[in-house]
Image (cartoon, rainbow, N blue to C red; front, side):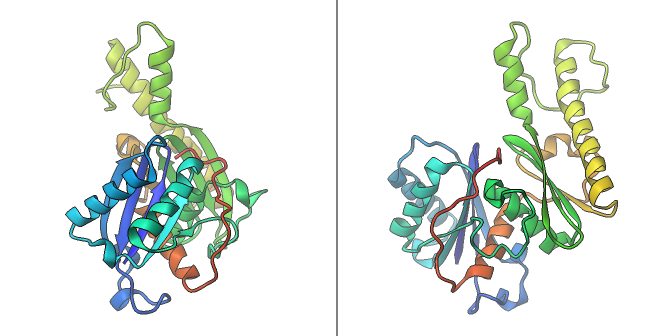
Length: 284
């Protein structure tokens, strides 16, 4: 089985995929989504030690019925440099496998047209690879996590770049910590845009405001890469605004894990690459 690990600023998302006898063929013709056995999420915490993460991960997988001996390969993407080496160590010591680290020097199956490919967050490329595989090109990925990130893939399957803005929770925290009278509110849409009390006003600004941001940015992206671009939403907060931003063709919370599976299969059997993680500008 393949262990995939997406290290983000808020959470570490783990997936386990069945793998076939050969790296270039799906198991019994199954798609990556069909081969995904289980997913887990744990809080990102740079204060934890490798032993803590290792024991936690091993125990959680065993709780899901997956023994550590069943893990035969691993693939990691990370936007948290202090945790990158730690999880590489976890893979080696607790599962006995040297992980593939997604970076600009391995086969990504996609040309990267960023000015400096090393500056792109690894998760952004991984999401783009998965989006094209699952939905075709051109494609737009909207990842609502710690940051709200937009990524564009051209009709020719090239990663072009995108846009980054502070995420919903970052904006909410900024209001809470920098004002005296505004408070935290539940992230749900109010009955109307014109709030008649502070709670409703905050909810309107946050939910409808971000829905408007996403709708406008997707429109701008489509004007540049093609009106027929498929729009895929992902990230922990996408469900907050999806019903109020009618731009998504699909919501896929396993997009990054699927991309890690695909990239690992492209590189299976190749010589390992020295660490050079793409951890520059992603906020997730």
